[in-house]
Every structure is written in structure tokens, then in C-alpha cells.
Amino acid sequence: MSTPPSPPPSTPSVSLRGLTKDFAGATVVDHLDLDIASGEFFSLLGPSGCGKTTTLRMIAGFSDPTSGTILVDGEDVTGTPPHQRDVNTVFQSYALFEHLDVRGNVGFGLRRKGIDRRTIDDRVGRMLELVELGDRAREKPARLSGGQRQRVALARALINEPQVLLLDEPLAALDLKLRHAMQAELKAIQREVGITFLFVTHDQDEALSMSDRVAIMNNGVIEQCGAPEDVYERPTSVFAAGFIGTSNLISGTWSRGCVCVAESLAIPVPGHQDSAEGDAVSLTVRPEKIWLSDLTPQMFRVPGTIVATSYHGATTQYVVAIADGLSLTVLEQNLPRMRADDRWQAGDRVELGWLPEHTVVLR
Picture (cartoon, rainbow, N blue to C red):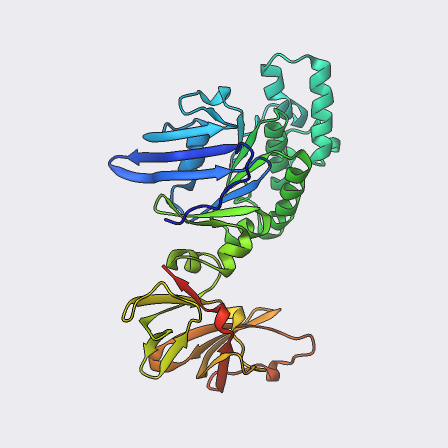
């Protein structure tokens, strides 16, 4: 398991120490250690069943850990009931009160705390303006769109001014266009209110576009944690490379500074010193890092044959067969004046290449 980057010197908003959860003899979260900085937009990213939602539920207090410690703003809350923790949760299902209008939903938590009506009205009004629902205050949830319902749920959670806002796949039920719009809105709101967001998602693009840091979870452990650019450009494990984006995964044997994939193919990996002669090694090269034209002398080159093409509007994806049955995926930008005849076709012989620094060795 990789070690998460060190957090800033101030007290983290959330600290997990040895957090473990067992269900019926199976370990769902396995001795998790993690620090989330104050004001950070942090995402737990992974496939279904990896333990990310269970981790969030333990932080919220909805599920008790088998072992380990949860600290919020330096305070141990491991055994504290959910309503006494300085966190709020936004669920995928929104969980709105259908009999209350928008204003009633947003102000519900303040009313339960016994806050006076004038203060509630003022804070609800400001929160509705923040989420751009000031003109829908008297509407019932049934009359709202999915995106508007999501913003009501967000406003209801934020109005209590929690130390940490937990978001459990809150955009998963929205259509693609609305989901992209809400991603931008959610990030803008987080910057404005300045509190810590812990966002759980299985959507890689969502995590990369919104987060300050991303933790990739697999089988209850964190495979890699870092800034979006780091986890994408420099994955540290086979799982991390394969889960985020499209990646060419290549296996071979380490010999004299190269990964030998076949008798006719040895891929140089400059600077790599962690493998001994004869070790099994896996590496990856992102498809957009591979070129099919305008190759430079600095690139590692290999001949191949186009076996499949796939047009994606702004890009075209090629599958290129190289040595001994190995195929690589290549992603090329379609230039503004490019015609269909300008693109490579199945059966074309090509030479592909990439810069050696774009070869990443994996655990």
C-alpha cells in the first residue's frame, strides 16, 4: 500500500488511523491511514465494493469500525453518535422531505437546533442564493429537476456549517450533461464556503476534474493517493493505472535497463533502479503519449500495424499490433481541417513512438 502524501502542518479536518471494518468475516476496509486537510476537496475513488462508501459511513457515524480511530478536527469521534459529529452527509438519493418546500427542507436542521426564526430565515435565504434556488423557495421537491433537488440537499447540509461535508456519489443519478454542470457548481460552492469536502465516487473523470487530491481504493486499501495529475500521469500500481483512464499495460522481464517483452522488443526505462536482473516487471504508457507521426529522435520507436480504429469526435483511437501479439492503444487529436481520408485505416503499417519518460514502471 502506498503512503499518502504528507498533509499540511495544520490539524487535518479528518484523520483515519488503522480504520478497519469487517463484515461476516470479510475485511471491507483494511487498516486505513489517511489525513484530509482543512478546506480540501478530497475524493475517494474506486469500483463498487472497494470500501469507499463504508469508509464514508464510518466517518459519518452510521457504521461502527471494527477497529481504528476517526478524528475530526483533531477530536476522537470514533464512538460519538452521528448527530454529535461536526459532519453532514449528502446522499445519492437526496433524502428530501417531500411534504416540505425548498425553504423548509433547507432550514430543517436549524429548526431542530432551536435557532430563532429570524436567524433561520436569514441563513436559509443566503444559502438558497448560494445554490441559485432563491426563486424556488416555495416549491415542493416533486416540482424540481434532479439537479435542483441535488442543490437543495447540498444547501440543507451546508447550512449547519459542518467541519466536513461527506458526499456519497451525489451526482450519480443525473444525466451526463447535468452531471458535468453540477460538477462545476459543486466545486465553485466548495471554494466559496471553504469547508472540507470528502467526495465518494466511482467516476474517474469526476474525481480528476473536481479534487485537490484523490485516493484510489481497491479491496479496502488505498492503492495510491495524490493530486489528480500525479495519480493519472504517474500511477504506482497496475490497478491504479488500469482504473483511471485508458492505459497500455505491458509485462516483461527486467534486463540491462529495459523491460524485455519479446525477443524483438525491449523497452528502455531510464533511471529505474528498483528491479534486479530477471525480475518480472509491469509498465504502462498512456495512449495519448504515443505518436504515430512526427516522431523525434528522442523517442523509443517500434513498428506496428493498425488493426482497429474508433472515431470519438475530437479524437481517434487506434489499436496497433506490435511484437508477438502485443497491441497498444493510441489516442490522437483530430486536427480542425483533418478529413476522414487523413486518418489511419485498418491494415496500415505505421511506426509508433513515445518519449522514454512517459514509460511508468508499476508495482
